[in-house]
Amino acid sequence: MSKIIVFAFPVFLLLIALEFWWDQRQARLRGSVSSFGLSDSLNSLSLGLMSQLTGVLSKFIGLLLYAAVFDSIALFPDAELWKHPLGWLLALVIYDFCYYWLHRGGHRISLLWAAHSVHHQSQYYNLTTALRQTSTGAFFGWIFYLPMAVLGIPPLVFGIVALVDLLYQFWVHTEHVKKLGWFDRVFCSPSNHRVHHAINEGYLDRNYGGILVVWDQLFGTFTPEQDACVYGTRDPLNSWDPLWANTQGYVRLAQSSLQLPTWQDKLKVWFKPPGWLPASASALGKSEFRMSEVRTFQPPRSTAQHLFASFQYALIMFAGSAFLWVADSLSLTSAAIYCVGLCFSLWVLGCYTQGQFRGWHAALLHLAAAAALALVQ
Image (cartoon, rainbow, N blue to C red; front, side):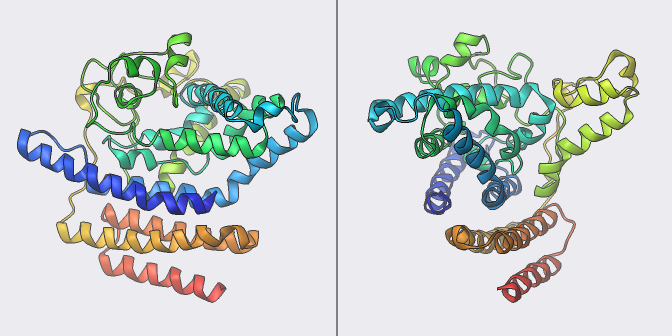
């Protein structure tokens, strides 16, 4: 699976480059606002790479548990259906149905939102946003796919349809594909998914479908795009630090839990919708959200600084791709050490991008991380 991602990543980057070219062209011709922020895009790409790096260590959890359920209680493990294209198509539809409920849970259960919110933190909407993925979602997401194991869908088929569902969702993260008529009523489309990423009143927590939006039609969570979308989260990240992006949701939940007086509420806050507090703790509540107060996080960076950050990311991406290519042959200890070293470099890049390090500081820290990994090898 890691090798497939290594092959896919250059394709993603090429499509992102083409979208960026078209975006800048449209901005010049029509005077429209760009849908790209360079620091934001680097942050999204960093989070995507970090997700793949940590996935080497965490994704096997879900696959092992899926295989264990399949081996022990699968109802139709030897069904001929799963060996034919029609069965694979049915497996994809079932996967997408399970994904709908995982995705919906990711917005309505605070513990799951702490992981999924990473994907929504960007205040821009472009193809780099598609790659902005969590590094912690694998710890809980597997639960929603166990019905597929019970039905007897083989782990190999499950892995393939999961990849197809994920790859499909890449293209819907763009502002440059407008409404598509009947397609929008059946499938997840750029128009439908823009609504999903928006924080506008009336758009919040809508359109969860991965490939099919008919699930939203059936369960009352569909809203068509009408007004211009404002992107991000209502509790903004305001940081380019990829480690903080992945942990801030859990930290804030822990802080809320510690402040609540009863153990029941300390537990409930993890499983209630995001922002929930008991009536007795209203004083701990956050101020009311106002759309007029939304500000784009964009610390000033010069062209030279952006070029330096992009060059540093390219080096880390090359090293990360090399790691992913051989990850399956490494011991768990070696893989963990390489993962930590590469994630450290991504953290340094994020800190540099928001002005916490000077360029030579960042370069030295990257060199130190590379030297440490070389010594380990």
